[in-house]
Structures are given as C-alpha cells and as structure tokens.
Image 1 (cartoon, one colour):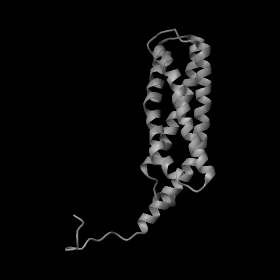
Image 2 (cartoon, helix red, strand yellow):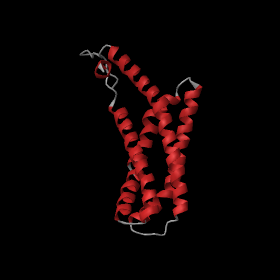
Image 3 (cartoon, helix red, strand yellow):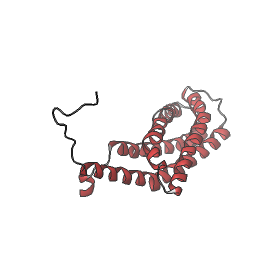
Image 4 (cartoon, one colour):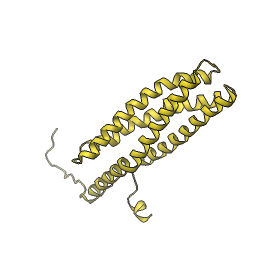
Length: 177
C-alpha cells in the first residue's frame, strides 16, 4: 500500500481498469438479457436492458479500445520482447474482431430496445456467445500480461523523470527564436 501511495498509477490506468470492470458487468448483463428474452420475450425490462447495454458497448467500450490502442499498446510494441509484441498485435486484432462482432449484435439490440421482435433468437444467442467469449478472453490477457507490463514501464518512466534535475533557464541565455 505504501508503495502505491508513494508512486500512484497514472489516472489512465485507473480508468482503464475501471472500464474493464464495467465491461465485465455489461457482459454479464448481456448474457442475462439473452436468458430473459428466452423466458419472457421483448418486455419493458428487455427493452431497457437492451438500450443500456447497446449504448455502453457502442460508446464507452469503443472509446476504451481507442485508449488502449493510443496510450497502452504503442509503448509495448517498441519492446524487444517478441512474445510481448506478438501478444499486443493479437490484442489489436481482437479489437477488430470485437468491433466486427458488435456491428452484427448492435442492430438487434437496438430493435429489441425499440420493442421489435424481428431478431432471430438462435442467431443472436450464437453471436452473443462468440462476443462474450472473445471479450472475456481478451480482458483476461490484458489484465494478466499487458496491463501489468504497461504499468511497470510507466512507473519506471515516472521514477526516471522524478530523478532528473529540474530544467533551469538563465536570463540572457541565447534563444532559438
């Protein structure tokens, strides 16, 4: 605990970790929604859940992947660890597959949210199973390997920066302008 207070993680990592928790919760809700639809059909509960889940994965989750692609993965892709780089590349590919899967699921959830019954339950169940499995495996890999490595590299950089002497500008020194 003392080390955490002494060298707090950058806000970005806390936000990414929190988002993984939210994604996990919404994945659970997605599975529960499919079970509810099988039992009850499209009712008010299903409509509300479908709307909430669809909005989350169409906005927050997509922004989360963009944050990983721009703030976490680039530094790891520069590693000399070929296994780490291969894993990051695989996770980038996963982002594409997750997005492609979501593009097939989202219109069905929007239809349910609007009260329509035209979705194909067997097709939706299969699409959701693939989506849920891919997302859970993806998050597990990020949390077990990628995030710890990225956090370690960020903390190392933070320690190096803290050890540097402050820049001092002298009055009358030549300027580049």
